[in-house]
Length: 316
Image 1: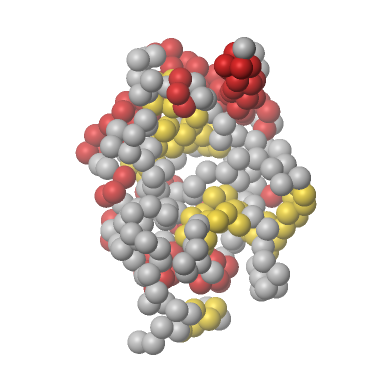
Image 2: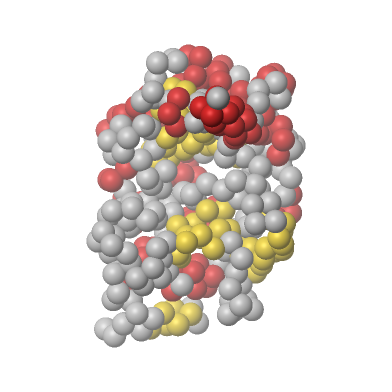
């Protein structure tokens, strides 16, 4: 077969090129993988402003938020203010197979949707905790920390599901009814992190500054507001091209992130959607979580002030 073909009206090119150094995969592997899990990943991407991470030949990976000028007219877009770049950005909405294939042909490897849908941009549909172990070989510590988060949520009457991040850690997700604002969800996420840390301060930490973490798992409560999270089933730009994959709470001790790659997942998943099967029903956030969270400083802001304080202390 030649290196170019067409699917769903999308012309696919250079399919035999390697994806990136260490990918152990070609562009064809990426296209085939995304097509195989298409309806499952689109269920998570649809209606959500999308950032992608692309790798062009011979270049470093880069995150693309604003759609390029040559984007086909059939790709749905939405204009939003991007706080980070202080400008209006035209985000894509990946609502169908054709758009997903077009992104794959653009060498978009990672898919990072917002936690909000376009019709309610101030109402996140998930509360998310990102668990970042201290080293790439410390996945077992992330597993322990995920159980702390699950416990803290359960103590607040909330049920959760877990997936590998596709990198070295885990994401704990709680589907929400769309009645809590971005600010309240962000506050509740901070409260869950602090409560989880309290359950086992030797294992987990909310310290935003890396040097303060002392080899513990970082409970990252900043995946709220305008932040994005690697989507379920999204490939990642890591050796072997691993994929963010759902894991049952009882199976966490038996897996590693490297088990789930663009080569292994289509067979593992078959016709199922294990993420949809595992996600609990949307829930209301417990009001005391929101209340407690609003008394906890935002980690990033706190870290910025602390960094400045330390710099001053070093100078004096």
